[in-house]
Image (cartoon, rainbow, N blue to C red; front, side, top):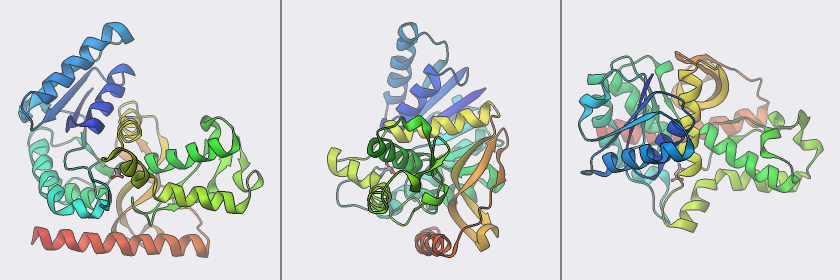
Length: 310
Ligand code: LMR
């Protein structure tokens, strides 16, 4: 199995590193536009192999996509990260062109690859990659749900003083402040979370989750990478090992949840074909309203992309 990670910045390099040390695949190719950076990071990860005891080969390439030929899965992390004071949507003008160009280069070498988008604004960059690649919607998916859910689970684990491993949760909608964490579908070792935490504390955690990316941008002056890179690697693993994991991922909806032609996070089964099945939850009225609000926001940004693409 061969995986390509486009973008050797913090997120791409973290993703490649996780794929390598967890021996998810035999070969990881890292591509970047900056001369020598991908080669350097690939070499550094490879030199860590004897220390951490793995044998995944890592190969770097400065913009030479022939090295990515016949990749099974491609993770696109290219583009600018946001700076303090910016929203993810502010990146659209720059990142739309980058994601389009990268997708074309990838498809030319690996027409059957499954593409995972990490670049922001996430939902709309998934739209860009989908229309550029012309692949089925089940093969062009965005990484946000695992990351946002991980933040929610981590905050809950801290508040309840329990292992984050035991917190299971679902989160839907766009990857922005309008995302929809779902307390009704959150459990701690099988116990509904609402039985373990006061309502106001839970609400504060939901709100902190919604702005979780921004909290890190404020702290570091740039966006996060450990959790985003690991989340993308977890999606790759589910696909290449055909694990049929249940994760929220961003994809084009075609009637699910009464939503058509919009890119949003929904729970799916992820396996060797990409999205094997979209899971349709029985949302209540309040949850549905939040999802619709999120849809409205993503649609606005999609129409900005339509204007950019002419
Ligand atoms: C994240 O949520 O960490 C990423 O989408 C990066 C960002 O700008 O917040």
